[in-house]
Amino acid sequence: MTNNKSGRITVPKIVKMKVAGEPISMLTAYDYPTAKLLDDAGVDILLVGDSVAMVVQGNDTTLPVTVDEMIYHATLVARAAQRALVVVDLPFPENHLGVHQTVATAAKILKRTGAQAVKLEGGADQADVIRGLVSAGIPVMAHVGLRPQTVHVMGGYRHQRNAQELLGDAQAAERAGAFSIVLECIPSDIAKTVTNSLKIPTIGIGAGPACDGQVLVLHDLIGLTSGYVPSFVRQYAQVGQTIREAARAWTRDVKHRSFPSQQEGV
Image (cartoon, rainbow, N blue to C red; front, side, top):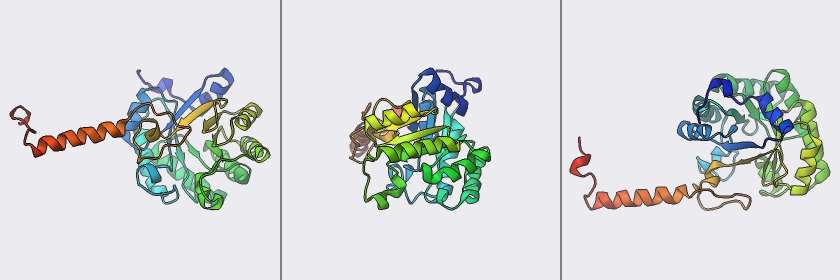
């Protein structure tokens, strides 16, 4: 696939995809070469997720990642993306520090990275923040259902089943100006109700097939994990196994002095 600026995915295009009935694809990306591959593959949105804290940094939760670390990874991803919309997570606890502080942080992220939008966890409780960001010209993707940043309050990563609360959160985020909403780990029937009630697209993760789009953590998708794979993930490759086998074969050749050969010298 040949990418060009004229074919760039924008926030208005994402909204129009719902109207047109075109499913939206979104994957996480944290570095330049991976983002380039995903962009070339035609992924619509590259999410620089705070999941980097777990997937790349090896933490147990998303909480430790900092704003500066998010900026670093987002810069690499935005540099690679020629077609995809680049969205950056606001790390904990940035969107809980007041509207002005959140606007300042989000503006800093967009100014330094070249990304086009931010994502924040929350719905009705974050309506004022979403409204403030949008009024400042910063597109916002909301996130309702399971919220990884509130893992300690929830007592773990638990599915969310309160239909009235989920619907209220999604509608509040839409009214505040969010251009899309991630629905994480909620029953399929509730996700369908929420999706049908909104004019903006929903992007599901563990929320069934009725959402307007789907998102996964790339490392789960390609089998580059430390072992645990969520039940809602379909693995399309086993990259971790491939890397392990390649490294094992190379180490064996080094130990046996069969690498490098005379032909592999300079």
